[in-house]
Amino acid sequence: MKITTQINWARLNYVLIPSARRRVAWQEAWPPSTRIGKAIWRFYGAFTREGRLVFVACLLTGAFGVDVAHTQVYVLFCILAGLLFASLVVSRVLRVPEITVRVHAPPRVYVGDEVVFAIECQRREAGPPVAPLRIEGPFLPYFGRWMSRPRTLDEVGYEEGARTEARARFSERGDLTLGTFRASAIVPLGLAAGPYVESAKVRLRVVPRPANVVRLATPMAQKHQPGGVALASKTGESMDLLGVRPYRPGDRIRDLSARTWARTGTPAVREYQEEYFTRIGVVLDCGAAGEATYEASVSLVAGIVAHLGRGEALIDLLVNGPTIHTLTLGRSLGFLDQALDFLAVAERAKDLDRAKLLTDLGPHLAQLSCVVLVVDGWDPSREELVRGVERFGVRVVRVGVGVDVPLGTQVPVATLQAGEPVAL
Image (tube, rainbow, N blue to C red; front, side):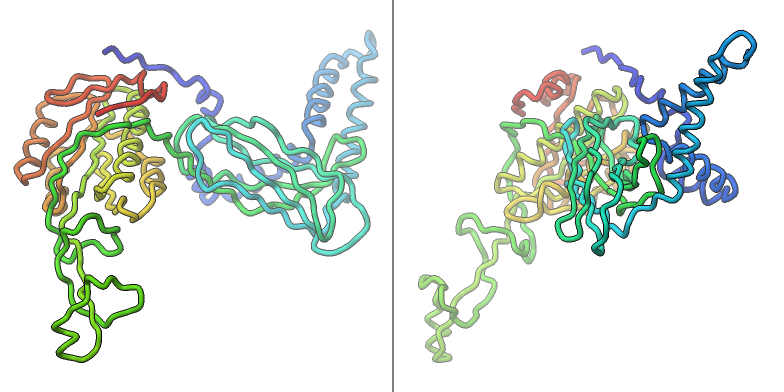
């Protein structure tokens, strides 16, 4: 299957804008430049969206009105410049009263879903009415897009406050620190706003949407787990005797220990612990076939983990390239969110040392019953990885995304992107 690489043209709009981590490093390394940048940003941020349009119009009319002898466009330039200057002067003294800005947002959202930011503004003390408050959201990354902006708040009360919403959509995964929402008072003409009050920084995880995995054929062999798995829900009756303890109301009559009761004169019950579990590791070994294939593979891994979490098996490992993430998911233990948070920041590993990966997996393989290997290609190094895992007595289920895998299942990328059911 031929994979075509699509260019994300949206990234070109952000070529000169560094990532959040680099922006912080740049600010720490160049304090004078930071002060100059903040001054320019304050000047730019003092205008509303309408004010910025008027500012652009003022620059254009100023350019056309240079020749004052043959045109009167300079009159319009003077009017626009006067309005902007007056709005800036008034905005400096138009301060927001003592208010609190809170933002409520979900901790995580699926790729492509709309996320709602609820912004609440409340006055800390009673006072006279103030000018309308403008709410502005943070600067979004290149894969984020505002679907609706927060409306202007006409009145903010002392007890009830005011509430508005903003909606955004993200087309890629990531662990995002978006920044703050800002509330500021608008001047009567609506061209500028005064000093703002900020909310706390908003953090959001954009997690992959799990694929619709309806069936996964894995060997259900159980491995002995000395001491069992604490808090795991019990299935069946194949459990080992853990000990004897005093009877408590609600205990099953069938678990009463007659010998201990006769010897001590106090009712006692036998306590059992299940020590044989089916534990599965999921390995994502992708990164060479392209970004679209890798994103489809991440979605498939999320779907596999979600499917296994609904059964009786335990998901013990989640491996992405050289990174091994240990977790215990399934049988009423853990949540799918743990795996999604890990996959939200998963990165492609193009040059993976699979011999070292096998060495790192060695201490964990003794407890695993099966390993699900998701790949986007096949080569001798992957074959050696499979043989190395099987030498520990662990079966390997091979799943290829967009490629043919020997003795494995092939899943087309288009099937995963369309959200169609997948049977492995």
